[in-house]
Image (tube, rainbow, N blue to C red; front, side, top):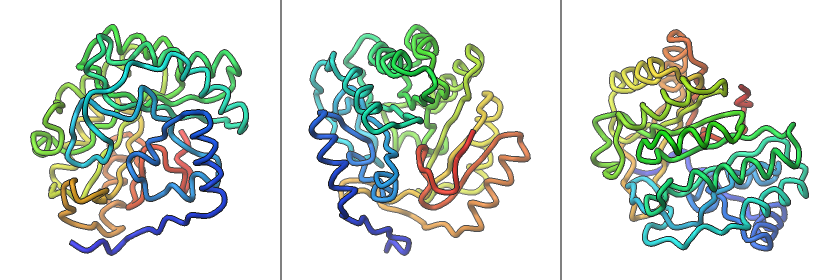
Length: 276
């Protein structure tokens, strides 16, 4: 299906400067690795999502363009480099995500903890959001994330239950819901999730997903249009009109959640302000 909503990436001076700075600090962003359509806009505002624990994932989700394979050991100096980068650019809101590291006994939770603490110890006023993998549902890992002091705990559900075996063969719908529930029951932080549409899901399935998230205590949900990042990824089934996103927003609000939806929305996207 032709992408009728294609968003151009403008390779301007701001984008180039940010890419050079990231390479100098030896840091990865999901903005680059996942080929996010919002990269030009976000980088121009010094807004980015750090991707820790390398750029190789141990899983192979069919919607993602991040490389999969055997990753390298965690870079012990990465948390401090991120903190220095944040200080240099004067960033007040930091978002940290990672590849999935099923090869590590804690899934990389301690590395998340060290990264959050490196930023908070530098300036406690900096707001930190962590967008974590499921850690195979390990409660010790999830508890470590909570103890880091992150202001927002996020785990993306990604898609409706029926599509999990196709899109996320190494993940589990129920386990992802349990991660969100654990974060909510054991912390005072804002709990957030996100998912994509346009992969063949029905409206009824989306409503069911929103109800499941609400029952787990999710505070905020971000809904975005799926765009095929490369020829290797699954193709788009449907490009949804604005009215559908508005319907999903209204339904989520009636359930008691803050829901933001739009074709270019991603968990960390800044357009129209996703304030908590």
